[in-house]
Image 1 (cartoon, rainbow, N blue to C red):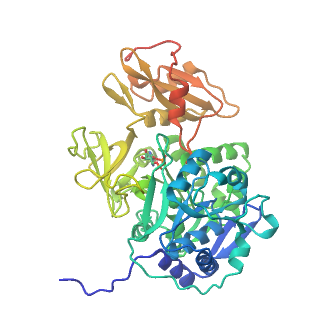
Image 2: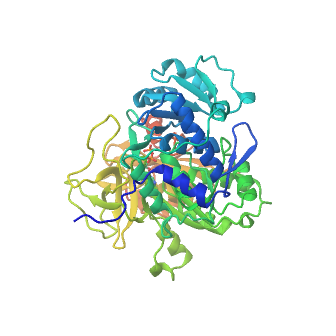
Image 3: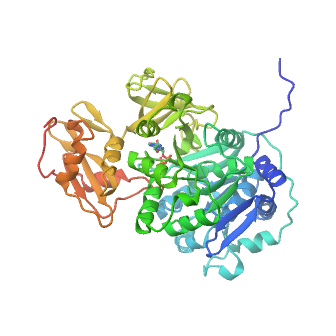
Length: 549
Ligand code: ADP
């Protein structure tokens, strides 16, 4: 027997309609690529996203067609989020930090018909345009006065394009399972792979992000969205903020410490999200500006994800900002939320140190995501906090296949294999040990590069650290620490190894330490270990050690 409730499709257009109707004057603030701050509100974003939808119609875009963006977090990108998906087309957010050849590949693979780009990417567009086989129109996301000097016959100006359109567009209704947006993984090995989200997956994911035990986004939130909108839909925040009418603050192309600080200060930001490298950069800025009263900013909640957050960073976030730190784990393939590290009532009595230890775990499954860990034979492992296995997840916002790729990438029970190794404890907290391809296999045991990097970052003179495995004749692999010192700080290789031997098991202590000026990062701000492994492939430790010494 079927239920008798209304069968309204879960569509992205319903989010912007809700925000514009019930929170019309809640501000949307963006640093523009031209420089000044632009102020809009949810009513304004809906008006202009409807103009975008009319413009797409005029450009011959039909439902299901892919529309690319090469853009930072701005109000215009937000208008495209709603205008493109709301009209039934598919928003393809291209990561501009990828290599130009990768961008060619994914735009051609997605068969984007229109490419909207920020003026900061004009040179990039000039370079790649000849290789883009399906793009018929390029749109520079600016006004006439700032149009880039590009010799493209089919180049339009965003403000002119949408100014010429009516703003009374009726969002179409269609099957909620239709594709809404497309985002490629960064493809550190092999070609990037396209993750194709649906309206249904996106709306359900947003609903979860607003729940108090997850991110708790609500109408009092003023969110500084540092996570790029080309990285897994900006962690879903452009949608979740509309669902509850939160204020959204976007940094545009300027993500330096000073610019982030000014937005926090001037826009009463009380919540922010970013990968740990962004916070590391922000803390370097704060180190250079001891006159800033960070607590006075009033930031109450900071969320980190995308890579493990070292203990020292969690401590500093909670101490300096006086904010609550929450960790999230996920991937492009998980929309991206998989697990979130909120504490339980039973943790209320823990000491600060014990709380931090809990927060270093990636978190518990939220409603909609079932995590499991499996051994090499695919059998599920116990949730005892000790058994480590491959992490698989299942749920309505988890990918089951890649765009134009394999039709099914799931295991026999319908779970997505994440490529991460993790433990799950009796309360359901997932702790990522490592990516399977990054874990160091030493003498038949695993050494977690995440744990070692976190321990190294605990040294006051270390700004950033990477651990890779180097070949060893007896132990198969041994860890090598590659570290960046904090500006103005000194530490020797011996002192750092001594420091680590007090923090981790003796046989985990790296065989050697190399100091570098900077570490390579992926297009999403993570350590680029493939490049480090290549660079240090034949590295010989200064004093080869044997395990247990
Ligand atoms: P890409 O695969 O393109 O680098 P993703 O953002 O999809 O980008 O990366 C997902 C991976 O990032 C996960 O599989 C995991 O290894 C890592 N990751 C994400 N969040 C965390 C976290 N909180 N702690 C540790 N690793 C994380």
